[in-house]
Image 1 (cartoon, helix red, strand yellow):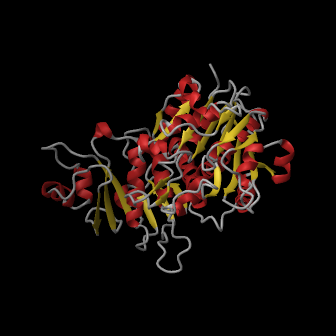
Image 2: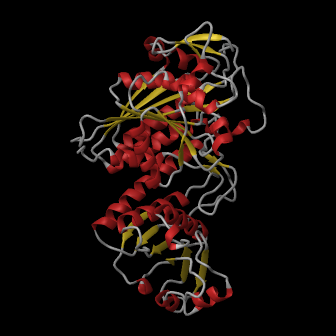
Image 3: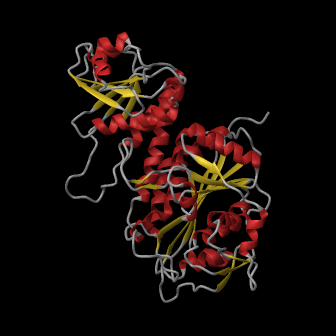
Length: 495
């Protein structure tokens, strides 16, 4: 799809649909006269009847409106002015796009609301439109919901708008890349296939890539990662993607993004219940998010050095599978008693975190569908944020807020580490059932030394079970926007 700006007057724009943002009005307020004129007076009539209120994500589609050239006028609710944000605008733009696409509409034009600064408005609208075009029905042979959209027009001009449009397009495209990967079934997206997709992405984006295959992992001593993979006929790998700016703004900063990519997780010998095990194809959503973020970062070219690490395995209960009670030696040299083979994500991540630090990374953040416990704690609205550095945590929270992704800081008190004590190894891979997401994070913390590190547990946010106005059921691509915002923010020279 093509995206561009336009200086044309809204009433004269030649597009299949003109989308105009409106605010929720207080009792007694009347419709904006200009917008009401474009609607031929229908806007005020709809307000009077209660058919439209302007609440967030509410849409009113008017056909053949009297006051505009476009054959459709869409009034797009943003809610009360005090509650509006770029995140609301993004979701509203996505909801409007999803309502229109598939109906033969090829071009849509958005009027910017003028409340958040044109750059941020343009970025939010572009992200919303791009992500709205994703559908999980890629393997349907009939009835696929294909988008007919070919052109996005933003009715504003200027460098700020152009910058926001470029950013939103790149980020939305990266988020869709993550979702396309996460929706793939386990039989078609094995670790080897993910490696090939990463190679294709790197070639297209101009990223450096290195793949540590099984032989290299054995030689290097990735004992925890290899232990998870040994029950599968599919060989494991560690994908390393490198983005190197021509002139780093802060040569002292090397950002490391780590994403768990278990392409299918049966739980191994500690096998999961059959109900909903099919969803365990999404256990590589963290790795998918990192790949999508790297695609966007390469497109936007921030002056920040970034290296991505994606450990990919399949966790199966084969004849050679790891047993509960086995002891593995990690890349760091620490030993781990594997009490539960379904706590495998932390095992592949601990070796990867060690490798990342040895590669020169000095700022770390990982994303993983790690624990069901975080869903118990936070539901499906927020990802859990665990961090060993207050300043790093604050920066991530600021970036997530700006990106419109919801995180919640969780504790990492030293007392939780006691649950991981083992009588025969340096630590066990699980604690008790209480505070399970915290003890999982404490396990990872044991491998990051003193580097600023954050862990994002996205088990509750990487997939939605029911469609929403702005997105279909399936993978969400969570963390892509925050990771890109982090790379852009770290481009600011230190004072």
